[in-house]
Length: 145
Image (cartoon, rainbow, N blue to C red; front, side, top):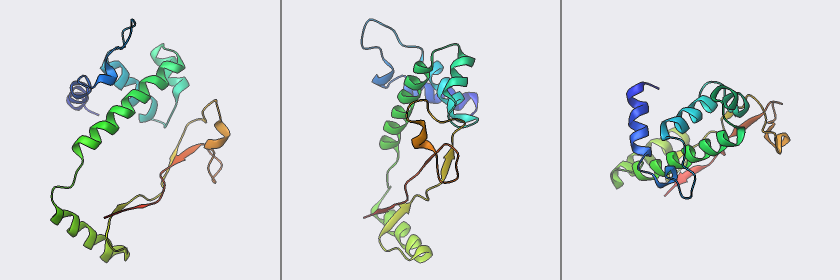
């Protein structure tokens, strides 16, 4: 991610209440939390221990920062991602039906595995996939109207 994009995301996130302190303790700056998220998930999947070590923070802080950034990205997606018109939905559904045979479908996820560098310490065995490495997977489903 380039510097300009990073700063733009920081500017957008700074308006989100999730990054504003709610009690007596202050929060780390948004850019620090976003950098932690990118370091944890960007290079080699989820590596909270390595990220905590490199940033000089606790592993719990890594999970907290990643949770905040994930929630902010989700909220941002809900605000920004939308169908422009009903005609756009119709065109998309027609293309999906022509390519896959699924009627009235606007899109789908494919179940791609996202490999983790290590399983989480708590309930880590739940994260091992059928290929015998720690991973998370998107669920396969379609978006219908």
